[in-house]
Image 1 (tube, rainbow, N blue to C red):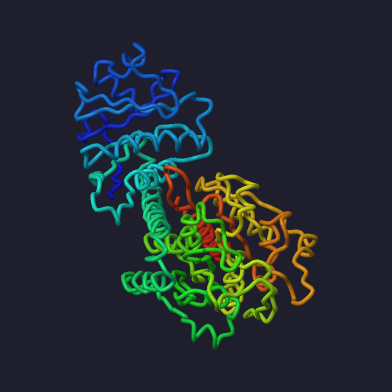
Image 2: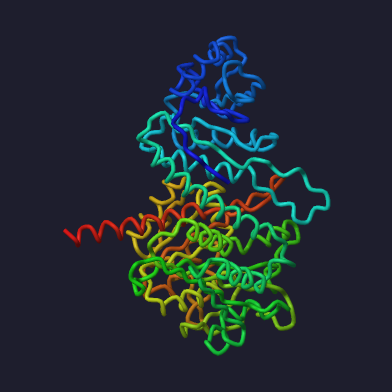
Length: 508
């Protein structure tokens, strides 16, 4: 997808469709005003006659626009001017590209950078346009014998009213394009069925991603023999009941000027299918447990975005991959397992398996002496009860890290909410027979799951993102969402910016 920037008079732009955002008050934005003048007040008349009501997300396609060089003119409602904040802006942009995607149009031009959004510059608005484009054209029909026509859109021109905003728009579009690619990668991995997307498949994808990176990414795969020798018995215990072998996948990106600069780590839960094991889940809705590897998928997606943006940081991405199945060899409730860290765990519920693979991955992360570690997991149904499907749950042992992640989520509009990680909750994990139990009962299930992980993250600043409510959508529109690739990518870009500030201060 191309996202060129153009500052010429929008009335002279040659395109298949020209997209114009409009507020309900009828006062036209700069690009819209120029188009209105050039088209003998076409836009103004449509509004005045009531042919178009500029409610938020409302779209009107005008198939012929006299006086303009576009084949089509599309009006998109922004709603009330005083209520135009980030969410409203994104809703309008999504509505526009949802309408554009089915058109037989290879190129469109949009004037969304004109829209005033408090505290958001041209770069942010251009980024949101690029991300929305990728969302709209995404399709997953790999297994359909009859495929719907693929979207033809290849180029989205960003119309800029102020010449001084052009560079910012280019930067924003570049980041949005990269994040859009990463989100698409994550959605596809999440949408793949469990009989295709296995731990071995994820390992092969990592190796292929590294091979195609031109040397910018390396991949190391630890198979079950290597994990056994390492002592990662907790991770291995989860896959004991499956014919699919478990894997620990490690991808490394070296972008910092100093090769030994402390890396930032992303750790993804990669349970490629979760039956619950011996603690078997109900059959209804179990098909959606192919999405239990969406934490891992978001790590792959973020690595994809990073390779496109090439920030000057060091990154290590770890995926703990296993399939949780019931079998004669499967872990049983009451079993006690030994973790890589040396702590023993009494498994009271085999359906609380995500923390069992992540704890060994977090211990493995210690060897990289990381600047920060963020794990991402579809960990608890309790997160959905607490936060619904809008916010990702965030827990951390470092308040500064938590604030950095919250800020990144606000910028990316991929938001998280900070939950407490108080010592009092740790008591719920007490076991009569081992160092700790793998569950803490029904109360505060999301928090006690993070408490479990915190026992294995005591050597570095660490944050946990519970994406059980945000990683996929159920119902008629069932499918992976691609979250939180936007948040994670923004977090890493912010760390690059922090490093540049530190260097400038040191130079002074």
